[in-house]
Length: 361
Ligand SMILES: *[C@@H]1O[C@H](CO)[C@@H](O)[C@H](O)[C@H]1NC(C)=O
Ligand SMILES: *[C@@H]1O[C@H](CO)[C@@H](O)[C@H](O)[C@H]1NC(C)=O
Ligand SMILES: *[C@@H]1O[C@H](CO)[C@@H](O)[C@H](O)[C@H]1NC(C)=O
Image (cartoon, rainbow, N blue to C red; front, side, top):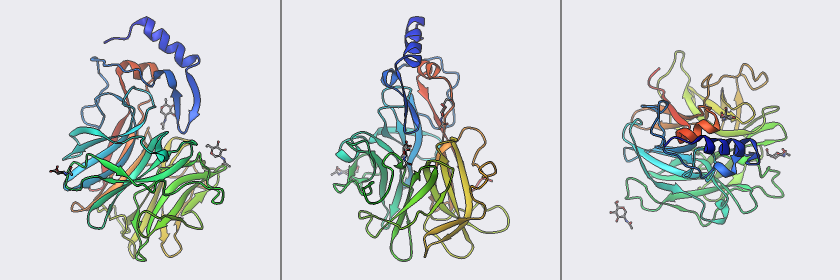
């Protein structure tokens, strides 16, 4: 259905009038447009190949994983409209990372630790093959905290239902840990050290120093903050959606991916962060000292102009997974196609995901 000029005028006046609130987290908040749905049949810009739901807004890919041969992709999704808002973890499955089938929403606000929002996070496959999701919840005080969800029924290959830990939140800003409750989000996939401790990173900042806060746990439920962040850099602002993984250190280009917990000789590490200030995904290559839990990049953020980016167009909030069996690492990220809000509402959707595969180089 085409939008009538009068409706369009009404929309424009909402956008340029009182409807726009300043930024909440990363996204503009268009309160009055969050539940305005349209089903346009004229869709010249829909992609034939990249991931996108049938309609509405998407942003970050969340918790991608392969389970019993099926790919699972969760994503920040507004079920009610084509601008950011009402965010849930929508869920789709695929055999080939190209053709996707949507399932019911997997994670949505339901307990105090996420009652004001279920934001980005990652999946970790625990020993024995059991997936666990860590994600950011927004609590009744609008503080950002980290929560755990696990599959309700491990025999369901589609992993349709997820249950949240009654111990949530597992990581939270407190009066003693000096964590900014508005800047504490997006847990990574966890990795396991030889000492038996799981490690996970949470994006954060103190003033303008961006950082990846490190937490450790033996049982994936009780998490203790490390004394220092894994890495931080002055002047970079908020680090969203960190991603941290090993790569093979050989001379030429390598197509082989490594499991997230691999370390040792011939291994280097990549730390990727999504800079909220610039809206780009930057990455550093360096050395990870797991005894000290410190990452030292070869070249850091001192000159942010020269820091490598995954992509030099629009590419943000990306995340990788290691695919056992195929020995490859797959990267998925959000492309914010940046059409105007009236255009998004007219076409009925916003955002696509684009993925890359280390075995194709
Ligand atoms: C778990 O999933 C399996 C496979 O879909 C199904 O047969 C079984 O009934 C489910 N169990 C429960 C308790 O829902
Ligand atoms: C905490 O984060 C919020 C949101 O970005 C920011 O407005 C505030 O200045 C931060 N406080 C400090 C001490 O960094
Ligand atoms: C997405 O595009 C809009 C419109 O161009 C822009 O305001 C916003 O900052 C972009 N966000 C990201 C993460 O690229």
